[in-house]
Length: 258
Image (cartoon, rainbow, N blue to C red; front, side, top):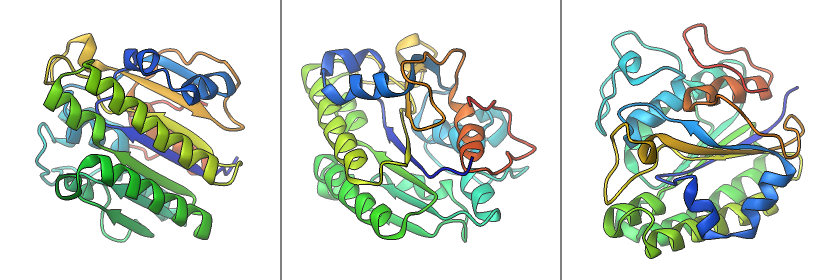
């Protein structure tokens, strides 16, 4: 199989915001590839626990991160970056929220780029990170790149989930997504998702608005127009490993979606 993969995560993006945002590239991805607007994240539906579960394919009670503060795992599990690096795959990380630095252990990344959303605004940081990721992919053709866009979550906390400002931030994030996808080689598999949703000006509960996330996947392994059923955030690491022809880690609990 051995594909190259770009994973884009828009923090705090609710599935029901996609139709309201109305960006044309959303429908293009759904038509060209496989998708679901009913995937589930983990509890607590908080950014760092959700990301740890995505990259380590276990629920928070297993990796031990229950809030946005990293603590070392008591029984360490190799995450996606470590698993790929062990099989000589090159990985890049692009993020504008500093706590995500702990998703990768030392030595597992070929490249890392952090541009502070707090310092430069998340609007500017999203744009700058997208530019950096495009340049990195086109120059070095890494096997796996993770691009994190933090604007939507920031706006959700500031103005409220599903507010006018929030919907605009979703649209603006899809502008970055479209630019990234159209600027890199066409043979890259692209996965767009989120870590959690939100309600009012918060998230972290087991409410459907917080727990439901989208998956949109395009590439030669994903059938056009197919609906993905029974999917969760812990399924992404095994799926990406399979796409890159790398075995999943024995401790991972998620299932492969291809």
